Amino acid sequence: MEQPRSDEDQQLVARTQEGDVAAFDQLVVKYTPRLYGLVYNMTSNHEDTNDLLQDVFSKAYKSIRGFRGKSSFYTWIHSIAVNMTLNFLKKRGRRFNLSLDDVDASVHNDKEFLELTQTSSPVREADLSELQVRLNEAMMKLSDEHRAVVTMFHIQGMPHAEISKILRVSEGTVRSRLFYANRQLQNYLDEFRKNPVS
Amino acid sequence: MENFDDKDIATLLRLKRHEQPPPGYFDNFLHEFHRRQRAELLRQPVWRIALQRAQDYMFQLNVPALTSYPVAAAAILVCAAVLSLKVYQAPDAQTVATAVVQQPGAIAVSSPANAAWNLSSSPISARDIGSMPVRTSSDNMQTHRLATPPRYVLDSTPVSYEPASFRF
Image 1 (cartoon, helix red, strand yellow):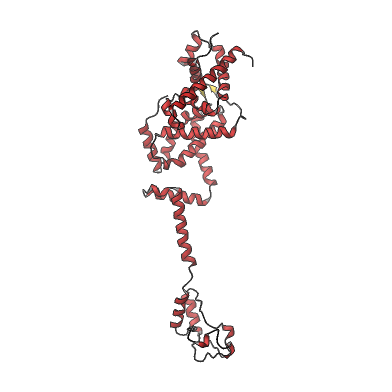
Image 2 (cartoon, chains in turn purple, yellow):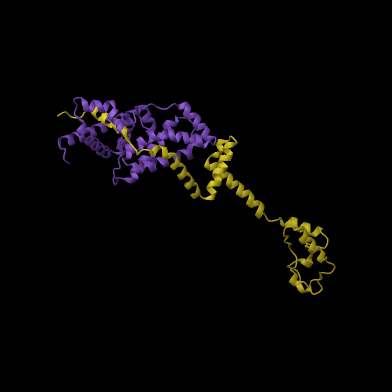
């Protein structure tokens, strides 16, 4: 996913800081889909995602006067979203219900989906929906921090450098978490493949 | 049977981008955000709203350094301290005593040299007011009209201790 133009964001932030509420509304509209994907894939619950997203933008609006532009607004708002979601997940613990969104019909036009289902690969369309369910379960077995990097790198398409800025860890830490998370997911799906009834 | 490799995992994860909320969710999100903001504003205490307004005002004056919470709180405390000093400041006793002596018809305040008003001297009943100036009714009315701050006259004998000859 492309990072949005920072100069446009800077103008909207400056206008918001001067009291232009409509400018902040534009930022909300712009970033809601992106942040929704981030928070949803970390929580796997649509209702929790909705509440968290409201809180994220509420906090961002209250704190925007203190935003000095040392980082991009993109990084800043993502930091808020990730931190608030991690705090929420710590409080939620292991007691949660999956509340997954439906897969949009646009998936059938996805190039990778077509490659997966039409070429010889371990995945066929008939198994794909079951695999997606298992993948969601596997994601929830990861720790919150590992799930965060998997979400940001693989699902959101962020580069390692951006993830390290958002999480305030080194790029090496981001890479090692990704490596470990990938192994965990592979092992879980391989186990499912060997023992499909579980 | 092939095992999943990193590429398979990455592909499966990228397909999760197609998991979307119900139709209309994003269109309605901003409206819901505004509704929650209004509800939260109504729940805020008055002092917090006043503080935010003060911060907005300071920011408009291009003094962002003064919009931080600690600075705003300090400014409010300073204002409160100044106001409380003005309201509760008691008049200076010596100044009042001097003013009372200078005003004609006022109750006299004894100087330390005046033995008649000295509490450590002869009993009250033996004291002779003599030609001591007395307070007249017109002085009372004048005082009320002028609405001067209360004057606490020191070293004077309370009215109830005055002998019968004391006249208004």
